[in-house]
Length: 375
Image 1 (tube, rainbow, N blue to C red):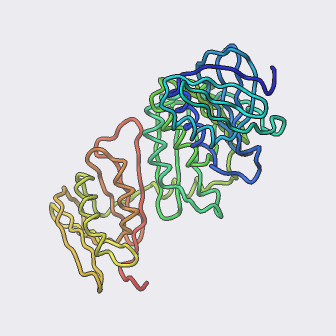
Image 2: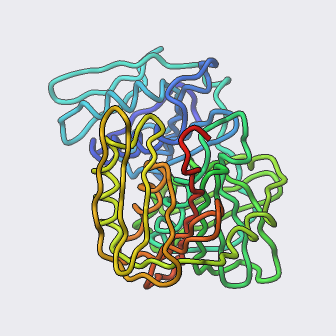
Image 3: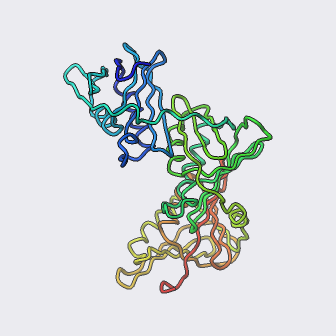
């Protein structure tokens, strides 16, 4: 394929959307200029846009009219921002010397070309392990990813643990203070094969959002890599380090409730949100289970105190537990319908699950805080 040559015409909106999607998978800036670029390959099949930061790579294929096949590399961020700002229906993209020009009927915008030889080529895919629907993947992955840690010093807690059986794909994530688990139906490529990967949660969640409308999402995996493919998009990532505490998490999911509460998540979340101004420097709120209700309290010597009653169906003991408001709100957010809280003894985690679970079977565990703020 000719290098440093390229001439094509494309609809601006789909091209800008693809550039923005690609940009969201990778860091906005890189210490290595070659890793901050996007490779544009124009051929008979259209335009392939590919980028990598060394550990993760993504590519998008966009239908365009190719006048001259070729490939160039430009700034990933520069291309995305330029395309996003254009209001023309079509854009002509032409390699002109050391520049890549984006031409509209009323303007010309030129990006410096980067060294093509230094740009990583599109990564190959691991073996296909199975397929899922995009809507199911998003419904499972996005809430589970919310429980992963953002502390890069502990990389195993920044990922989603993916394990597969004959007909279900299970997902787990934890930051040690909360745990989210979900499972969804899938079609394995080989029913006898096993899948056990630890995938960066942020990338997996972004891929699941972008693939949400796809009827088919392909999953690829080997010992070191994991990939998600849908429609015109593919994301490949290096797996995070193992081992992952699978056994311990399974034990945590074995819940022995002393009090069970069923209520509308929006009602509880709204009450918790109104208690936040009174939650003190640690952001703690208290839930007290009574007959037919949960009392939500916030107490702070400086700000004052709040108390609100939320109607609920309750069973078991009358218990009082303290939670960090932020974690409790995150746990309630994924549930669209009635939610069940299973409160365990002492400081064992409280489990949240849907009263009428869908196919994704989502469960969320939140560790309560000590009642004494000084503890």
